Amino acid sequence: MSRLEIDELERKWLSVSLAMIGLFVGAIVVTAVSQGVHPPSHVETIDSASLHLSQEFAEDKLGVQPTPLADGSLQVRLVAGRYGFYPREIEVPAGRRIVFRMASMDVLHGAHIPMTNMSTMIVPGYVSEVVSVFPKPGEYPMLCNEYCGLGHDHMWSKVTVIAQENWREPATGGKQP
Image (tube, rainbow, N blue to C red):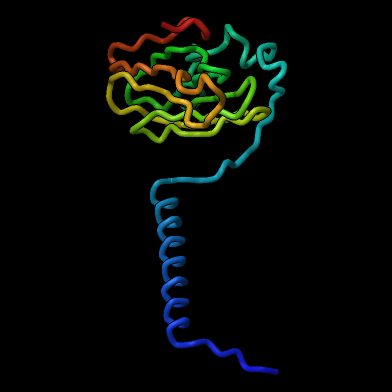
């Protein structure tokens, strides 16, 4: 058996490399714990080919749902398809917990609202769910951040956040502003 010999300079660079890897992994763990970032805990599947026929993602059921969830949060249902999010415009109240449920009708899409925690991939055949709170009123663009084809540049939607005192519960899902 031959003894493994490592040059002193190689040993130093190996130590620096391992220390950097440890630092990066530590930063990821600390950030995940402090920011509450968790991998998806349950996987919910859906048939993308018959998405428009499903009860939950039927065209008249999209948008802000009229009935709040048990914890008081609002649910918003969206469908991503080439090249848009449906519905195109959504109004939600400021300071209230919003649960976004999204499905893709064709290819891989992403949903991202800059300056918020709202960012997820929308994979065909699966339901994506993200919880967000918009602290102040304003208009927020929702952009597709996964290349989905030639019309990708034009794939957007608008989330309008209204002051809580001016918010009116929607009468039905689907028809938004």
